[in-house]
Structures are given as structure tokens and as C-alpha cells.
Image 1 (tube, helix red, strand yellow):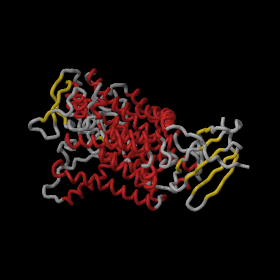
Image 2: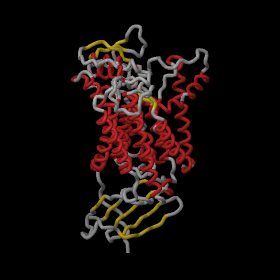
Image 3: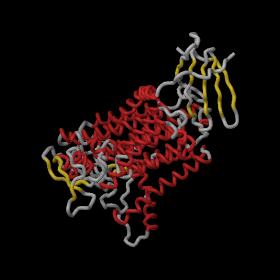
Image 4: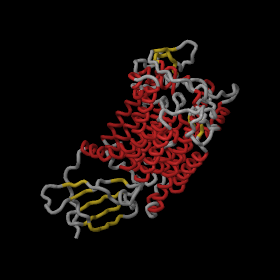
Length: 588
């Protein structure tokens, strides 16, 4: 006969020891996922000619200048306000001249580019990124201090890929370690578009902003919707770190942070209130407020929102409503750019990539709409309206001065929240999905295979455009004249891309929800903390499963393992409570 659990179970682990354990358990998955994304980033970096990525020359000049002490630069007479003058090495200053012969000409290969400049002599240069927040450029600029020529640019690209891969890997590790939501992994695969990895692989602050936003969305939603009662210190740290970095990357980054926080709290208001009572969470919030205040102060005082006025011009007599309609009419173009339009917006992804991403995104939205409950459906529907209207309003507010300046990558930190929030909306998902584990496994496997195949196809299409042009043959191994030669031989480059894609698919398939690891039913347990209260018999141990909030917000499970070899489970629900007893597997 089972005895009642003792009233006092002794002291629990300290916060510092819990955080150390969380980090130790998180580290292997984090490092493995980071290595996968770094491999994919290197494949994109080596397949992209120098200077051919959007704004790469200006971004590289900004990075090389800031590590030499020029934080903003000086105004230049006759140039727009966004342009500043700095002094950088020749090899960095001449980067903007390399893609001129094939920029905007997708049928022309990159073979026409002039030879790379290898001089390290200091020379004046112009950049229209001089007012941007300095964090990203401080992280990627150091190689320009001791390298010159193409080696410096490729080393800066590698650093950019590394920093972004750390946050993408963190998002996967958080899902694997702390999420019981069976839809979160497919949503994460959909959120990481080919454009995300492409921007990670070149010198562009958008890459780090988007990757940090992926980690911020993922960790914050999991924290509030699944762990509001007992937040793991490691998960709190992952969310806080991602948000802190995101706030300091670009001019609109603090706005994305505020939206992520508000949407996550709206998805589970009661859980958010419980989280705010935790001292650890309060300390992180206080620190993030300080960081956000400093980032916003820089943005407003340095003029980070001032951009180069080279957008699509609007009619002089157009009203605000007409400009808003024009901006809304370009949303389809922006979404295609968010999935993948490479180079200087002259290299679209193949049609199959767009079809796959559209199908996967539609599946995530449909799942949320079909399985969501009233409040979460209201939150999700409001967010869908926000992701359409907010970019249009931002574009219209500056259209008379800068033109229609927006690009798809500018809205990605906001739009990646759609599949991730959709995964958290269907509160009935764990009532239907686990009853058909094979269906869930097939859904995750199909999503993984389709997303990885579309990633590889987009990479190959961009490589083909650079080597032979889009009008050239499908074969990228051509050795005829007029073809561009990457810094490594094409077979080796193709091997790196395939290896990275296969590793990515393996990562997704390995981390899919399994009944033996996450529990296929509510109230399942994974691991327990062993406690030894004073005076307890030597023949047994009392273990208490830390209270975890189920994927259902109204279903909380408490489990006590008792020394007599039985397990008693209490399921607390709004409508019922019941006991179950079953034999306990002895702890070693």
C-alpha cells in the first residue's frame, strides 16, 4: 500500500547549481547544431563572390573602420546624411567595384569582375552604414586588422557565420532540451529560410539580427507557454541573451524585441504574471531594460534610422492612403525576398523552393487555426494582421523622403514569429498528435526533408547564377571561358554543401518528439532530482519530479516517487482530479 509523500522533502538545488546543470545538458546539442549551421554558412560564403551580397561593401567598410576607432566617421559634403567618410585598407574600400559588371544582370556570370585588390594601404572610403549600432561590426571586423585582400573578407564572413550559427544552434538546443511541443521543431525549420543562412554567410548585420530573433522568439515562447511555473535558469538565460543581442544590432531591433515580449506574454497572460514573480526573471528583465535603453539611445542620437534615399519613388501627389496601398501591394515581393532572393536582389530562388516554403508555412498557419482555442486564436490572428500592416506603415511613413525602401530581410525578424507562434497556438495539439505518434513522426520527417531539400536547391541555384549565369547550363562543373571560379574547386564546395544539408536533416530528424524521450501523454516524466531527507530508511529514496507545465496550459502534473516502489500521480484539471498507481522503476 502506497504511503503519503512526506510534507517536507528537504532543501532543493540552489539556483547556481541548477543553472550549471542546465548548461551542461544544453551544451552538446548547442555545439552540434552550431557546427551544422556554420558548415552551411561556409558553403554559402564560398559560393558567393566578394561584394555581391546586398550592402556587403558598405558593411565591410563600416566593420573595418570601427575596429580602427572610427565609430561613426565624418560627414561628407554633397552626400546624403546617411553617408559618412572613413579610412580603411584598399582591399576593403575597393570591394564595391567588384560586382558592378554583373550587378542586376542575372544572366551574366561573376567572371567579369576585376581582380581583387590585395593592398593594405589606408585609403578614404564612403559608407552608408556609419550610423548603425556598433555591436555587429565589432564582432566581425577584427580580421581586417591582420589580414588583407580576399583573405580578410572571407575571414570576416566566417566570423559572421559563426556568431549567427551560435544563435541558430541555441534555438535548436532550446527546443530539444525544454520543449514538449511537438510542433515547435517543424516551426523552427520553417522559420529558418534560405535567405537567413545566406545573410549569415556574408558581411551583413541583418544575418545576426535575424538569427538572434530566431533564438529570441523560440526561447521566449517556450519559456512563457511551457515553463511559466518553474522556469529553468538555462532557458531564462537563453532567452535573455538572445533578446540582449537582438536589441543592439540594427535600428529597428528594439522594436522587434518589444513585439516579441508583448506577443509572448499575450499568448499566456497568466503564465507571464507568474514568471514576473521570479527573482531570476526580474533580474534578467532589469538588465534587458538597461541594455535596451542604451541601444535605443544610440539609435536616436546617432541617427541609425537614417538610410540612403534610393528606394522606389512614389508619385509626388500621392496621398498617405495611396502610399499605404502601394506598400501593401509589395508584400508579396517582400515575402519572396524573405524566403530567398540573393545578390543585389537579382537572383531569385527556384520556383520549387518558393512552393515548398509556401506549403510548409500554410500548414503551420492552418494547424494553428484548426486546433487553437479562442484566446490564442485572437492573439495569433492579431499578430497576422500586425506582420502585414506594420511594415507597410513603416514604409509609408518615410516614402516621401526615402522612397519604398523596404526589403524582405528587413521584416524577417518579425515574420519568423508567424510559424513559431503558430506552433504555440494549438492548445489541443497534444490531445490529437500523441494519439497518432506515427503521424507526428512522419509530419516532422516530411517537414525536415522538404525544408532541407529546398535549402540545398536554393544554394545550388545561386551558385549556378554566379558561375555560368541563369541563362547558362545547369551543370556548374563547366571549365569553359567566361565562368566564375570559386575560391575552392566546385566538387569540394558541393561536398561541403551536401554534407551541411545532410547534417541539418539529421539534426532535425534526431530531435523530433519521441514518446520515450518527451512523453507521448500528459503527465509523463523524464528525469528526477533525488533528495535524501534526514532519518529516511537506507533501503529507498524519495525523488520529486520538478513541476513542469504541460503543453496544455490548464493541465499541471505533479509526480512523487516513493520508497515503497510505487508512483502516485495527481492530475490537476479544472474539471477533475484522479490518482494513478503503477510500479516504479528503481533508480540506480
